Length: 116
Image (cartoon, rainbow, N blue to C red; front, side, top):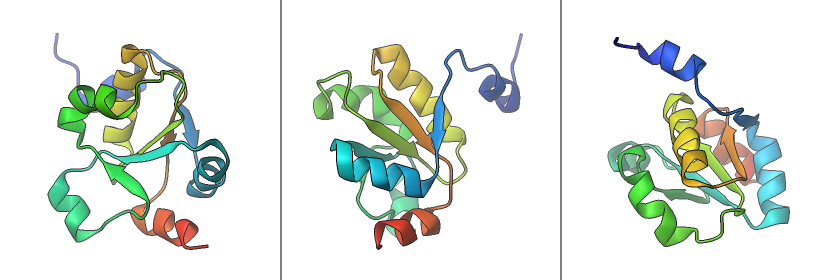
């Protein structure tokens, strides 16, 4: 049986924590976490998100362990619409990461909050 993307997102098997840009930036300043941009490199080149590490969704599982060896590292995931971020968060949680959040806002909003 094929599952469309909306159903796939609705049925993610984890309770994914979603935060605003302001909440994410405040937490990042306190917990030494990482903001991960899972958009493709060409998207990031056109509209970068300040203070984020770009690891495209397609290679996240391969790169995560290179960057984050501690399963409790605070990770904040974002993309353009939230869909890839939620899928990425799910995969990171499957890999054993326990402190994963999705940032639910636009790239300009993330940049605005980061500049404060």
